[in-house]
Image 1 (cartoon, rainbow, N blue to C red):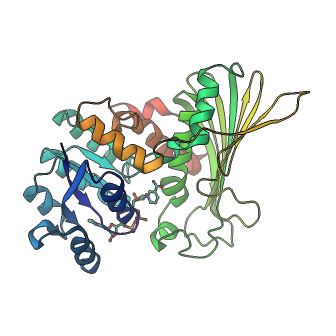
Image 2 (image 1 turned 45 degrees about the vertical axis):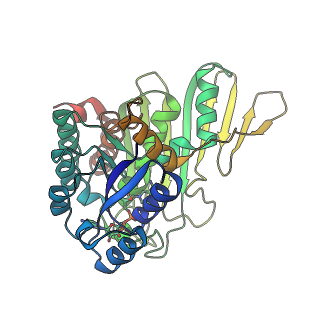
Image 3 (image 1 turned 180 degrees about the horizontal axis):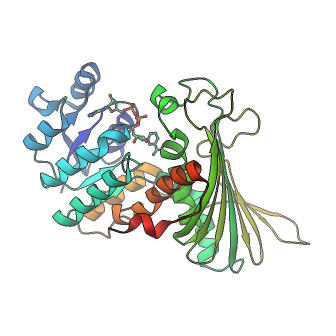
Length: 342
Ligand SMILES: NC(=O)c1ccc[n+]([C@@H]2O[C@H](COP(=O)([O-])OP(=O)(O)OC[C@H]3O[C@@H](n4cnc5c(N)ncnc54)[C@H](O)[C@@H]3O)[C@@H](O)[C@H]2O)c1
């Protein structure tokens, strides 16, 4: 049976959601309401979707009170996620929302509390988990092909030295843009690749004088996971040389029996001391990234298993962003459990 969707946001990432929902999942999803603050964009997308005027809204609250859809998709900037998600859940609609969960830990916890109170599914997008090379690394780990995992080094580096080059100006102007818009993916990836949750987190952030960002564009962060794996992360949105930008982030995993490296493309490189380097393509995925997550969510609504990136789990990744912000400010180590209490 087709699931109806109230969609929050219509251009930028939301425009891509609309494309995936209509083109890739069109036989399972129908958008029956659209919310967008930019009236021109609203009219244009509304016409493309064949929606009537009474299905188009500039106010998410009004839309939640009017449209009774099977679920709500949220792909607006982060500061609006919490109010919109809580209104949708309150109106009886399960929610799938873009990362980061929200702008503050309190807002993120408020969404999780509403999902618990209503008993409705609530999933967060973590599209990078569903790429062939990341899935292959997790298989190598789970199958014990190289024995036990010791530590992971991850590197993200984009050349965003020009203001506005990171998609939207607001990413350059907000506080801790690297962490909320960028590192949240990489911290989640450290959890995914290590197979553990972070216990202790520590690091530094800074803003080079030539940065296009009002706040810190760069940082080094360390994690100790609850399964004994350690992780080190370099984040740099002011990269001028070697870049490891979106979908090309570099991860190196040190196993008992060798080193695994992934970066651009689907190539997996395994180095064992004294042996020739093994290089191969990770097996392709039937659906990857957002497409996978949107399908997984619709499956969940139709009785399938809960999304791996449901909000209860994803709070663990979001807490790392908050811990990163605080350790950047006071240089002290943070216990992640302290952020998740209450
Ligand atoms: N998962 C990924 O790979 C990825 C990539 C880029 C962005 N994102 C996330 O997607 C979200 C949106 O980012 P973006 O770059 O598309 O932002 P954006 O500024 O382009 O906003 C997306 C759309 O939402 C609209 N909008 C803004 N406020 C709204 C409101 N209150 N109600 C309804 N519509 C509203 C905007 O007009 C725009 O059409 C963010 O949470 C961002 O972190 C995720």
